[in-house]
Image (tube, rainbow, N blue to C red; front, side, top):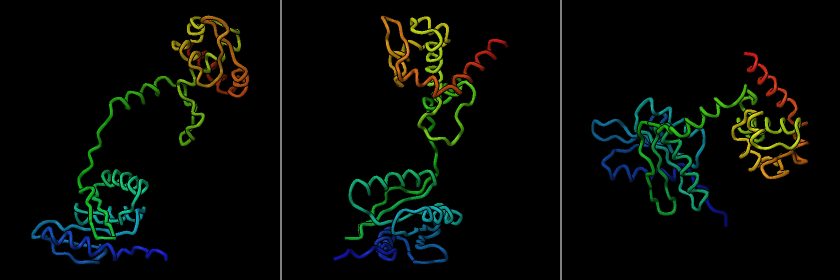
Length: 238
């Protein structure tokens, strides 16, 4: 036997009952709003009902904020980890939009208010800002077009690794301290030791050369290496 689909009208009675318990007079489909609740001289409360999260639901909620700040979105309460994850993710979006969020358990009519409407005040992260600005300052030129996928992103770390790669390709196995000095990469020893890209191999104690994958990378990153060389030359001539 197939399960009966939930309708928006199924959400209305439990939401209305909850608001009436709090002293509101509640009416459905007033103007463009699904649910309007009034109490004394307070601003009205508006609830938009939907059978699931959608972009149009958030659009409706934002549109109702031109009438009142007390706007809630209401959706059926699902079960399981996926349903709870959806609630948490959309609750974060509601918080940023200044919307409230409630869910309705259609089996027994339980309404749970997860979030009340409130102005959003984002907390800034000094650590994240610092990492962003350090990466910006260290990255040479503008090697990656905005909107590109994260795979193969030309970070400042990758640029430093390419400088080490280029030096070893030209000079052969070399002491890490010499690579750091000649390639102007202070962290050369750590980069070659960690070998995140599989480009390097230890030829002797403190001495590194290119792995077969590193040799292939010289050709694969020829344009990037050329750009780094040109920019280094420009800096030297300044």
